[in-house]
Image 1 (spheres, rainbow, N blue to C red):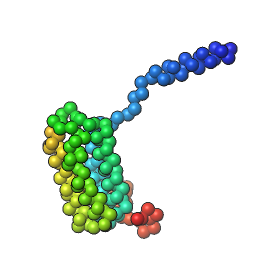
Image 2: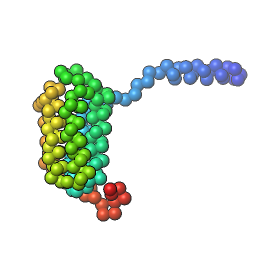
Image 3: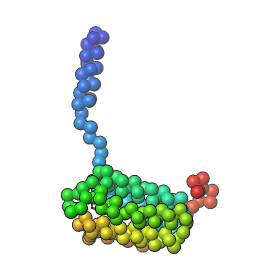
Image 4: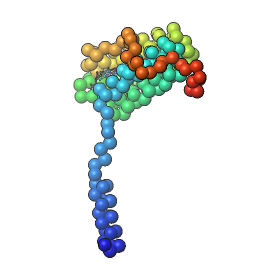
Length: 158
Ligand code: HEC
């Protein structure tokens, strides 16, 4: 193969690969919500076990999940209100209060803030026409393969 031909071939291959549609993966809102459900559960279990670093972590994840919801689904076909708007309006304060309780390692304040977060989840489900979808304090621990108590020698202890 002449070097000139090789160059032309390389250019052609490059052009074809560039022409491929850039289909980056976008999670559905239902998928994001399923993760939110898990984080909501783990947040409660972590705080119940007094593992405040884990609770802080799950709260971060919950916040990131809502950022994803707003980013990927600013609107939703079945919702009369824009997702971006209603998340901001309903969730900002409860999540802030939960953060303050976790930082203060205050179990009583946390329980109250957690119920307000849960209430926010349900209010948003109602606002978006998914009021049949009700979340609550977890009644049991569905994670047999995770330790919720803080390990005595945990390097991540704050
Ligand atoms: C925008 C307001 C809004 C907020 C805030 C919100 N949700 Fe949702 N949630 C939705 C919508 C809309 C759906 C339906 C999405 C779909 O299936 O397309 C949904 C679906 C769900 C589902 C059903 C998923 C499934 O496949 O079974 C669960 C569980 C859920 N949400 C949990 C939560 C939890 C927990 C919170 C709070 C930490 C929360 N949601 C906060 C709007 C919201």
